[in-house]
Image 1 (cartoon, rainbow, N blue to C red):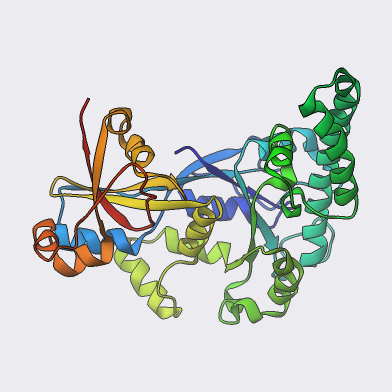
Image 2: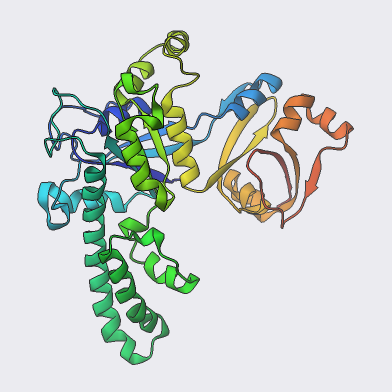
Length: 366
């Protein structure tokens, strides 16, 4: 499932350093604005303790985790919607992703220049939000003009667009993002055509210094960010991009030792990746056997035949039934045979909505 998360923010907030740690893709990171011009893409494994537990029990020949794509997008500046700092190009890159990880600088460092010459998380967030809103307003004005002309013909879709666009424009002018608006399904369909930047789901990455990690969300600069964005329902992940880059460069044994030294159970990136995955409203189901244990990505609410189709279209086309057990039960009982012996293997049909963490065996015939 090709879904992607764009890493955005002002220049010099640590986006490319974070991307390097995430994907080990070698994106250039340097202390000057617009170091990144073309977006860098990285496919990142989603850490999942449930898959690890299944592997320990089943000991398969191969293991395939699920993934999410991250896109390192160049830093935006005030005026981007008018073309400042190659803004038109960078905003187009944001349009191509499904969700946004907004990196916000929450650390002081005289050696790293801030584009505004001061560290203020709220100002940084508002700068980016303003540019995204301004670009969306341009899109809405163009759509309104088209609807104004075509609604006269009696086209219901155009009439709805003609009524909706001014309302959305007014809300955006008040500083609201399109994702915050309450819309009917028909209205949402009209806006979906525009692929508005502020309609994309977003979470915030508070990039801090290593000495701030212990304070977490209670760090003064981070707390300002949290207080500003959480009323809209957005989540904040605290991370030290430089620290994560060091961790990512270590060998697995060294990594575990280093994490223990700094008091972490896992890299901060793990939570960031899981947050991005969740933000896209994705869940994971598993297939597990001696040959392979594999995690599969589906949208929340997917029914069993469509979940089977992620593996192969023939599975969906010829779907008969699914044998399902939750991962905890399989780990506890250690085998399908043991699960069936105690009657905990469920048989589900075409209307079954797959749950996060299901282990599934599909029966099909084509």
